[in-house]
Length: 320
Image (tube, rainbow, N blue to C red):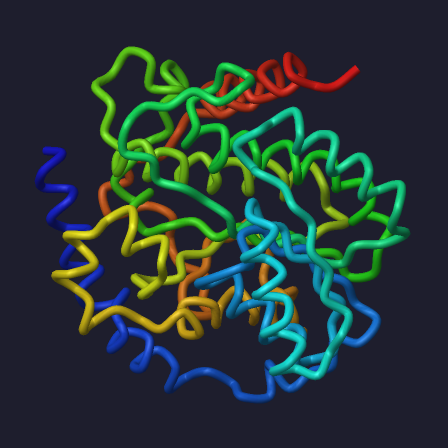
């Protein structure tokens, strides 16, 4: 059954997630949706030194937005900042060095950011990782889960009060179509018992992001939440984490800018908020977060158990 689900997902991807899928979908895009000024609006983008994150930061900077780029590597972040400023002419681009896998440091960063800034209009959870061997961070947490799930949870949770004080606040999380073949697993969040496979763990993390978004949307009606699939894009992260897939699909992959298109649209377009909060998007359209037959739906009990375990793990590493 698992093999069947993966085959279904792959061939769905061949139709929709590649460059040709984007080109076909873009025929129905409304050009004026992105004809907006972002002057006096602030954006935080994690993982913005390359790939989709950098393409998103570049597009928003060109529209006049204030951009806070969150990256692990200061040198790469500064280089990205210089390129964004040079291309956009916008000097309101700021670097913050943070490793999303270090949960305690995420807490500390978010709390400090709230003290230093009076508003944040848009949070874009883009950073992610696919570590193919099980690694533990300094807090004793599995690295993929710590980065893709708990880091996103802590950063968003901490910044919600600041977002709520800001005009037209939004949170966009970059997920993946791989989550379509995963049902939320609440019993083994850090893959301590199951055989470790980086691709499967990553897909499970991305399902977790979808569930978190749905919960946040219900709990925080002042903020517009969305989660999206960028398609299969040619980025350094994909080339490093999935070299065989990248080599096989290289000529069909989307550009980073095509992968970032829906992130930018969700971040800046007035059309976005016409849709209910909490939806899953692909190519500027809400789509189902489940493949046919709906076997990946979670019970309310499972969702509550998952969120409760996230909160417990978060509080265990919260700084004094």
